[in-house]
Length: 592
Image (cartoon, rainbow, N blue to C red):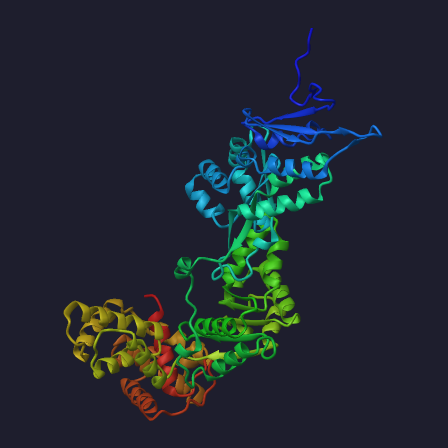
């Protein structure tokens, strides 16, 4: 029984004028053209190779072996190179390799449009290696995530393009790792097809090095591997509008309340890593700490384009760290954060009671500083007041420069209000702006909100905003938001600020350290609770109503005269007026 011939059988042909031809056939399955080309055993050192592409067209190439006088067979290298070049340039062979568009389309159909745009588009590199679809990603964390979620879908896409025996492989490509921080930098990767001119040049170089038809297999496989390649592209300008807009020093209003912090920030931005390392900026909410960190970021990026600058909050650092722990990608996490030149971390108080994250953050800033980098940190309180953080972390903060940012004084708030009004189209009377300054106190954010309220009224009515209008609009809102303050709240807050007990405050002692806090407590009780003088006097040790009237008059004189407070307190206040204002702010913020 005659055995059927295999696809790779060598079939001798007829003799032609004393010359002999031997033909080696390579059948390429249309369903899996790349996999078929991997059969290296199908191509031998035959003089003629027939490549049957897609089971239809046949390309006959080769050289005829001539018998010399010595009886040996000499091959004509030039003829073989020309034949091989013609085989590689054949349209049938070029069509056997999926294009980049075909790869992306197959993956998009397999994983869905939304998943493709979020995880693959401009974030991965695609390549064809033999019968494998290779997908390269930026880091191990993304690799583990995509293997668990998309491996089956990508395998189906590979089999659709390359045949039933195809598979999908994911690899980490270090060049795809983002070089800047996660909020601001957006590196992207996209697979692109290689130009035909480059393909021709490379094929010619490969065939020039090939000494015979025996190397044709390697040349064919090389073309299959290199027909598609990956190229890294810069982020598109259209996505820049979605990035965070970092402010600069020009838009920051400096004053006596923040002069030291502003000076230190500018010096750090001009020479990062050389002075004040780490720089620790603390202050109450809305005093400009984040603005200073953003200004440092912008100035360093402008003055030192080659430096790797990263800005993030401590919450973001914690999220990255926990994700690295769950994904077992801690080495990649450390490589990302410990190799930066300038590290800016906002709201460090978020790390309270997070022992593991505190330890990782400590080692991170230590390595950044020891390698010549700059660390800048912001918080709502002094490092010594971060009692729920590690002592090693606190001492590291104290080893640099600690700067306090106070609430803006009256003159600074006036210049702030003027800067806010610069970009507005609304028109205000001067007395309306004066009313805003008096009403909003030292809260910059409340000042911005009130100004927005008046601007909206201007656009609604088209009339210039006066003081009466501002009083009517903002006064009604203040009445709606007013909270009930009790005398017990005043008593408790005053005792906390001055460090005395309730018994001292109600006692008959006339010591200055007790008498002044008692007078202030009576003044605030009358001002915030509207309680009768007799009831206030009875509450504070059974005193007469005249004592409360005298205390109210005495504190009012101290405020109007701007007398300096000469008693120790737990808050930083230079005058009695500042102390009373801070006490009022705390009492109003208490819930009823």
